[in-house]
Amino acid sequence: MKGDRQAATPLESAISAALQAPVVRTEKDSTYYARKAYAENTYRSYKNAIDDFVRWAEIPDPIPTTPTFVSQYLVARSENLSPSTLDHRLAALAFVHRLLGHLDPTRDEHVKAVLRGIKKDRVEHGWAPEQAPAFTLHQVARIVRKMGDSLPNLRDKAYFLIGLFGAFRQSELTSLNVSQLNFIDRGLVVRMGVTKGDQLIENPRFKAIPIGSESICPVNALKMWIRESRVEQGAVFRGIDRHGNIFNNPLSHTTANRIIKHWVARAGIKDPHKYSGHSLRASFITVARELKIPDYRIAKQSHHRDLRVIETYYRPEMSFEQNPANEIMRALEDI
Image 1: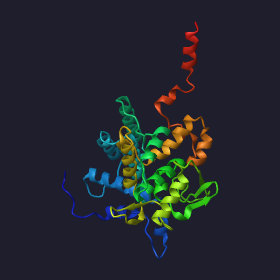
Image 2 (image 1 turned 90 degrees about the vertical axis):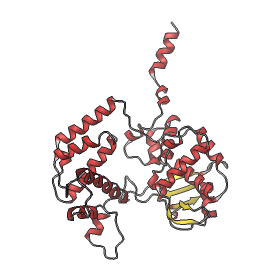
Image 3 (image 1 turned 45 degrees about the vertical axis):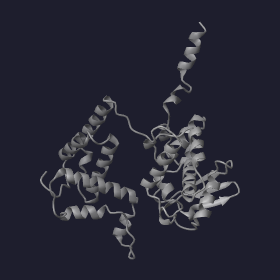
Image 4 (image 1 turned 135 degrees about the vertical axis):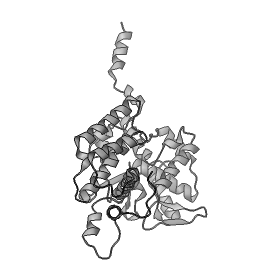
């Protein structure tokens, strides 16, 4: 290591400023609107990626950089980072180069070949993309039955069931606002705000969540949480301290994941550390596919634009469904 630098260079400061999350301004200038073009999480994750590249480079102002240097970075990080994370690191580098008016080194054919080679090597050595595991319906019932009537339990139950039956992305669920909720006779209609697939809300979308049985009803669970918490505006799901005081800010992703892991462990389900907020969305899609619900109908609730993405949600045992090996086996048994 060449030692830690005492202060950021001018270029590093420019990059850091460019990747800050959008800020509230009284005067809405071009910088304000430019930053509004991307989601807050995008800026944050890109900044973390660039910070890692700068630390690895150990030289002042490593941007703009060359395809050779990018390739070396990929090789250096290939042992510790997943292929999907390497994809994200390249996306961050590409974004910053374009933002600062430089040629994008990640488009170089050698860089692409190195990344493909890393992915192929990882697969050959047994790597497979990790997905948040999905719950079975029996597991859902076990988890909900463990939840009591305390204020944190009411919040957790509402979060769990609304997230499940609404097939929400975690970011959509943690940022859910009271103003998006419309309770009607048949259940709950949620008007979606800015989402991963629609940053401009050009096509207003809704999620309908029906009323269920008394023991497992997402709508009643949400009503009880809102009533007992007295949350009348702002974030629906919030943190609660040990004295029962409710915070104004929405749940962080870390806290939301901790909630899911806690109840998975309480229900006696194996490997609770593998579950996360995304398990709720994954469970909706996986269970729906097991019930032979067509993908296009699933996408109406999950808001997937590409049905091919839905095909990635499966359990290994689903491979037995409609498998022609079953028919061949039965035919052989008849001989």
